[in-house]
Length: 627
Image (cartoon, rainbow, N blue to C red; front, side):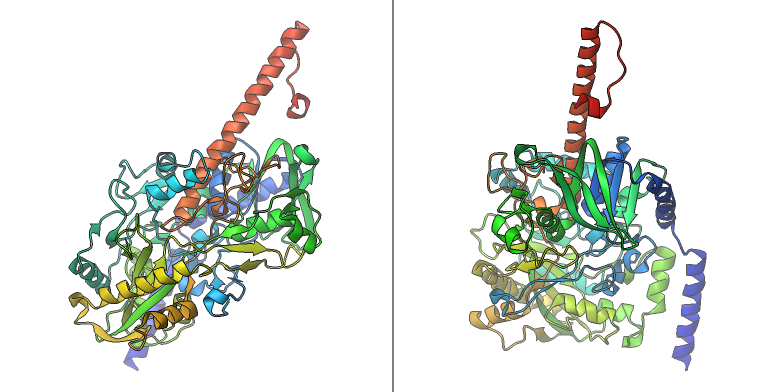
């Protein structure tokens, strides 16, 4: 009875506090943005300088940067504004997002490499995209990752160039440095919470002789080592791309953000060398088909992500001829590698029980039951601190499974909670569903530079049908070997003396799984996604017939059309992919605006020439007249 009374009183306190602080400044600003957008919608039938398909991590960046340059910008986003959604704002609320209306809920086709299983892929369906549904880790990879991009033909995307855009995008709480910026919109910080099991992990890695890394984004030192990851948070709340880039844009009448709409294809005009984008067809929030048109000299910018950007290209007739003809779509531009090269970070877990009830789930759950501890709620609400600021995997490191490797092939995320399933995503879903959790701790082992790549293919010509995702995980046996050795490393870490006072029986893979063959079988049966889809519309040299995009992210052979998102990455990087996607969009915005400036300069020169030829002043030319 007393426990119930304490719980009721605490919940009442939380409810009253929420009522008095229901919408923070960030949310109020985004609500104001929605009002400003409504006025801009009245002009939606007029031509746009830029039509951005997808209001995710890249789309939000492009919307802000291009509209700040006074261009008329339309954003088409299938999801809705998530700024008032506590599942998004509260970092630990992530557990309630999986397979919700905020999730596209993709599943790969059953694959031989994954023991005949399809693998669930969470992709954010909200303004802000997957920056609303990821674990917020901010790891850029290594300079070698970007040197590999240049070697693959992405000229201008080397370490020095991308570092400039990382710094431009960033507002780092640790202050400005050679590797961090403070004037950008994206807040990067440390999580204001540390579980004692996480502290034990840091000691354990030190016991094994690994190097302590204080900032994995400091490129003056090797990436290998262990430490605390940076996160995209602002004062204990998730900082999504929508929070970071769209706040403050509410007064821009030249920016229209349409949510709840589904793009169906890019409209094209011309043929051969004169083929170019003319606009975008979409299904509105009212279910009716509509079309947005480009202004003369404008561009369509696909920022729909590594699954849906290639899907939209193919629905528009741009892609491999045989596949398009198979599903009954007219081929407008044959590009064989649209949808080819889809890559992800595959992951497995090593998990142990704990003799002490000190897991993050012990702090979040009330008396070990299914209800949330009101004190954890109060700590977040009043001070934006405590376990609800965490998704429990902010500690870890990057490691080599073989000493002769040039860089780390495994990322370890230490999770201060016991796995309830060998599939880490399923564990989070179970926690979100209210399952009773036992105490424990886990290492999630990720092949951070995998060799496997798969395909995005259409099921049909129906734009509302989810595409097929084939052979994305473990299609290359090298990744199985990497994860096998990573499991051995994870076991070594959890066997260190620092865990002696906590260690109970190993839950996954289990003490019976010891031989390489048994570990390989465990890997194939339990591998899940670490949510890092990239590479399905890869950049390459201008003359590279195998590339989908040139180094300025323009679709080869199609004018006025670019793909600006993670699908453009030539190779997956050894870190998390949200920060790099935002960096890419920052650089793309500069590329787009540079081209716009060149066009304007040409128009001015043409006008001056005509005026001089006529011997008198002439009226200003419109873009259509100049063309």
